[in-house]
Length: 153
Image (tube, rainbow, N blue to C red; front, side):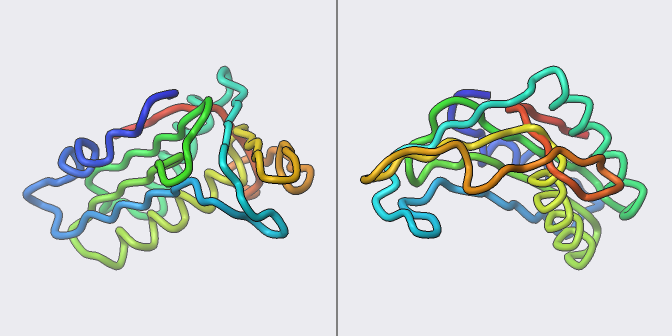
């Protein structure tokens, strides 16, 4: 997904009469990273053929771990993401806040490790695709992955 993420729409979509909690995590592009001041551009690339199936596997794993989840959405942008805009969003609704917070935290942590999406940063003194090599892992291993994609269920 190359456009701005639909944060408000996906947040509203997640609301269900049976769910008293909706947790929205939005990862936004910031103007710095470790040892890199003046970041002015982020760009994401993805292995698109793998992103959808891997996001679906992650969603299934989350539903097995937290069967009370009402609605679940995970969306990641590809292409250029300006500083202060959202690059990734994870939304979880559930009857109670504990499960929604736990599932959302697990969702973003596992997405970053298992979905084949790579980030390029440009800053005042240069540019680079990531801070260190990242290997894609299976969902069960909690590894790394990436394309811009979305899953909602």
